[in-house]
Image (cartoon, rainbow, N blue to C red):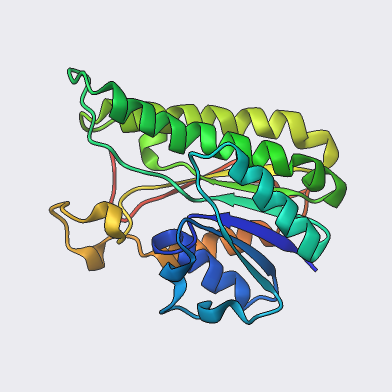
Length: 230
């Protein structure tokens, strides 16, 4: 029995991950801002004994505490955390939009920090704890001018490496998944054919593979792209 928490599981990559893992006999704890968003998915009505749907709010400091407790109360353990929730704000370097910049930092960096920190004792108990962070290629290089988003993703990559260092001796392995454009709502408005982009289910399959690996086959970063970058 492997219990996996997934934030941002109501759509896009997060939902695809949940759909992939429920087929593979994992037990899932899904963090959803509005549980009703799952009404048209395989998780509608939450009548599966292997699934917990929790009203998780990334900006609420109490929410990860309550979510982790509810997960342990239902399943008794936590073996993995997939930090998928994130936002895109188009903050340029010249902008003075401190509110948008703060939102990027709050949701893309501080929220996964708080959630994973809360789950860390249970990941240690697992002996094979897994943390999967959806970082983005924007955390590896900056091609455009969205300084705020890129800075938050670079910070998330640094946080991933710090988590790895802290949890290594307890069997915790941390993988940063760094996709380029994925065919989700976040990529709408990009002048690209959606079918040419990486698909959410492609990312889900990669994450499934990472979760299946033993401690002795650690992968720290995975870069996923649909085109050739120089």
